[in-house]
Length: 134
Image (cartoon, rainbow, N blue to C red; front, side):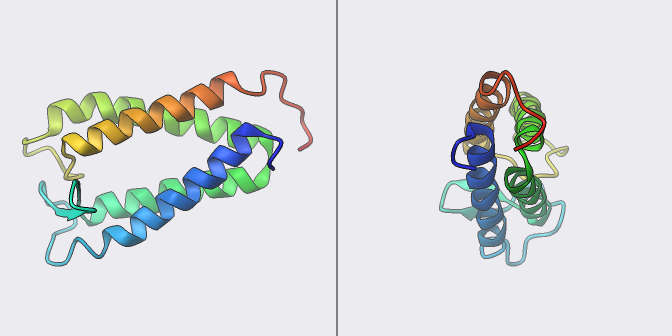
């Protein structure tokens, strides 16, 4: 796994996102599942229960792919990176609106763009000649 940037990144990001998802529940006491404003995680990232569940699912997908194979990690890194890029763009318009069912704030948008950049850079740029066995 350590000889594959995609597997390493997916495993590390997966573990971090699972941890963030779990920690998010400490900040969402009294917050509804789809509330447009939520509790603050680490004092800056706004989360609601749906946001926490999304972090858990994304983390699980990354972790499983990272522990599986290079092609799986490469595909999941690229897919989640693209999804985060889209969420970052859409998130710019969601902040402060009634459609903000993930309780996204500006700090979340910055983190989504940063995650997208790293995941897409590694997913698309590393291991151009991916072997079938890993």
